[in-house]
Amino acid sequence: MAYEIPADLMVSVSGVRGRVGAGLTPEVVVRFAAAFGALLREEAERPLVVLARDSRTSGPMFARAATAALQSVGCDVIDAGLAPTPSALFAVRNHAADGAIVVTASHNPVEWNALKFASRSGMFLDAEEGARMRAYLGDRNPPRAGWDGLGGVRGDETAVERHLDAVLAVPYLDRDALQLRRFRVAVDCVRGAGAVLLPRLLRELGCDVIGINLEPDGRFPRPPEPVAANLHDLERLVRETESDIGMATDPDADRLSLVDERGRAIGEDFTLALAARLVLRHKPGAVVTNLSTSRVLEDVAAEFDVPLQRAPVGEINVARRMQEVGAVIGGEGNGGVILPDVHYTRDAAVAAALVLQLMAEQGQPLSELVGRHETYTIVKAKLPRDVGSPERAYAVLESRLGAPAADRQDGLRLEWAAERRWLHVRPSGTEPILRIIAEAPTERAARALVEEARRALSADDAAASGGR
Ligand code: MG
Image 1 (cartoon, rainbow, N blue to C red):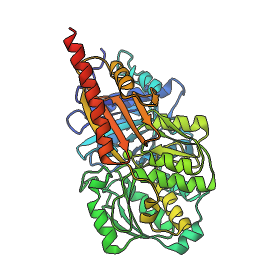
Image 2 (tube, rainbow, N blue to C red; image 1 turned 180 degrees about the horizontal axis):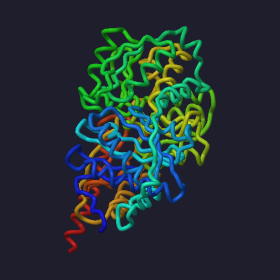
Image 3 (tube, rainbow, N blue to C red; image 1 turned 120 degrees about the horizontal axis):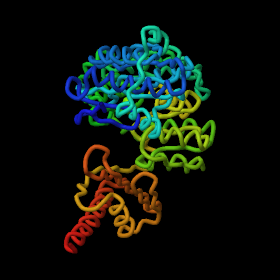
Image 4 (cartoon, helix red, strand yellow; image 1 turned 180 degrees about the vertical axis):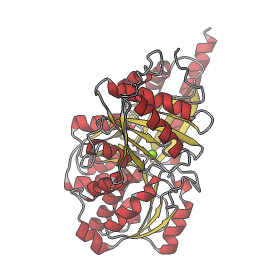
């Protein structure tokens, strides 16, 4: 009988997420992990799967359920235990494994957990691979192994350390200069998996580390997304300790957010912009980001006279485009930095090292490095879409808003480059709404853009219902 996915689960291209004990139970985890194992068995007789988890209290339970499921379909499991997502994905290539399952709900609140699936490339599943996996949740049952075909389990105690070594070997780092500079860094890992990596990395780079929330027990003391509004404790810590910089990670440490030496959270957009500036100083080349990332990165690329390409939203889309164009750096405006010298996945440790190196080379405090950039404001809104399809909405917006440039890779992105503003509209994956995001030099201009879009669509809705 076909398995029916519970309604309160959020199934995405590369994973499944739910509230612990409600949508997400060990039974659900077993279903998905077995389906993933079956997918890997299409290409390998005896697949090897890296398994890791962030610090959530439900992590060990779900990791055990996933382990049993993988064994039952004939996969061998390498258990990396508590580890950041980038460490787990780094271990995939390290072991020449066939894939990975990371038990993490990333930046989502404490009551959530999730499975994220990665392929042998050490990158998350793409749309095609995700669809092939979900076939095993439908009418194709995963073929189970008999007594003599069950997979085995072994531990990997050094996954985080090997990842750390790879970050320390990034060619742009001058470790002697960093040792000499001895930055004082305030750190907030929100009691997540970043706590087992980031403080160690910073000490290896000669920093004085002062931390809060470094106990990786999954009891997040604040909303775990590292957006500026959630970083007040870190801002205070920077001021009280007169630190050079504050660094915050999300629970699985693929995103990094910064606080300047004055104790002001500068917003996640600057993480990638600063990291890109450092890399481009050494190695000019293409930069890739997604369609919703701030123009601040575009300004940096323009300053170095290198192309900036925008890919559809989703880490895998950015990573794949980076490979296609041979990008020197890329990532997302949410603090997710991807550096090909280490791997094609977002990595907070990489981001931290690059930003410190930039500070050392420029010899300026973070607030000054940030102050050199134009400022922008991003405004987000939701538009209910009762009338018509997204395609209809895109056509209306494109014709009525009269933007000089339109991009249809992922929803609709309209850009007015001369006025330094853009608008990106795409359907929500979970609600019958359109998500709308606009950026402009001032908040007022960004809001005006959202309002203009709203008016154009409601005028169209009124015309459509009047014509019925
Ligand atoms: Mg994350």
